[in-house]
Length: 626
Image 1 (cartoon, one colour):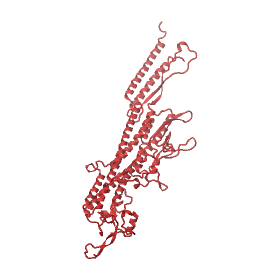
Image 2: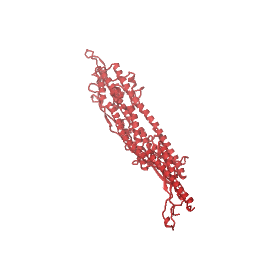
Image 3: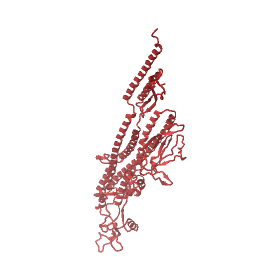
Image 4: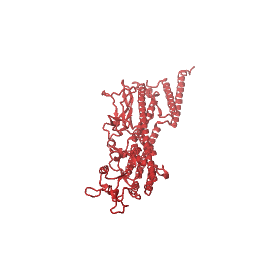
């Protein structure tokens, strides 16, 4: 009817009481969950009840249309989807830089030399200085076993430090491998939980339940996933038949490397409603068909399946397929951990640069391992070369064994004794060692025409003299030097007719001392033949090269720390903005308590008033004349 009926007003009051009661319940639930992680503030959804339509014929006194009270339509959450998107993007940046800084700090704990040795000098730097000092002492004491032993002892300490640093970096690499595996397991658990929550929320939607608490848990898991992987979370409505629409959540990779990826593998779907995927990652040494894998620690995304293992089938009849991610498809802490295991900076190969143009400027554990290896190899080869040579005369001409006059015999002519004579070419001219190749020198040695002196000081194994493939992990004092079967050559120059250099001649030891300060070029290809960089990456002494490694690490740490601080502050600001919308505020809830309590009181008072009016109408009308 056109106007509110007498008893219809009681319905209005009743609905008001019910709405106020529900409002108090929602407010109480918010207050109770103020400390619940991930909880989103809820609000009561209510509308004014109004019977639509009107009588065609209505009297003047009934022309006014009045509502019939309030209807509670449900409970919803207070969230800002745009802030969620921005926060999760920033979370991926924080995750990436935080993990990068953590990894670099672990490396710094091993090779950062600042303040680790005496007088604030680095330990390895001090060992290089000690080796130089002992060589200097040998200059004036050449030929004395005790001083040669002191040099050998200093060399032993130096190589043990190289070995120790390499071993610690190797252990760090192993621990980082385990962390990567654990992080992949954590991501897979999150993906499985989100998929299962999607299934539960879908069922609740079908039955008209919004499942707000399950949505809170899902949002919390999405936030956590965003730190591991840069993701794009989107919502759509899915028609399940019969005119019923339910919400569907889709999570995909957020195009971290689209400039390289023509197949959009960096936008691979991880969650599609009730279907989810899992991640796997290859190991460093894993091979395929006998050949090394192209990308160490390559990620793979499985086909999308439901919780029963059934693969997602698309409308065209095809099924979801696994995806092999490219080298730089991910972004977030998972990718940062991977890069700690793969990025080699100046030692990057063509394959690495083809998949990631920034590979030459990214430095993880491999870069610092190879930098130390390059330093150790160049040090060993430099001093091995300095201690290997052939006897020459004072002018640098090669000499060979021959008969020479005995200087002690004063007869004329004097008797002949074993000595050295100049080595002459076919034209009768003396031959300089610098004019011959190593192969030619080796052939002359094999023919017994020249006299080799010295031997390797450093080897790739303490039980041999082999210097092939020396690295920081295997550099050792050569066996013959360790066993005193060979000593440091004091000089390769002999006076005419002499078989041994003069005891006062320490020219080769002086040369070795000068090598400690000599600036050298360091080529990545010298260590890694497949490295893209074929130019020298540094020119300096051994100690300067060591300083360069440490300063590179310090520079990386500083720049990444700056980025981390910026990203972290931005993430905190965004999270604060989200909290201002979604979190429970006691002041707001106290206001709501008073508002709903007063509304409840007023609705009750309305019902009392209506009761009094109705009582007057029923029991008090028409009793005046009695």
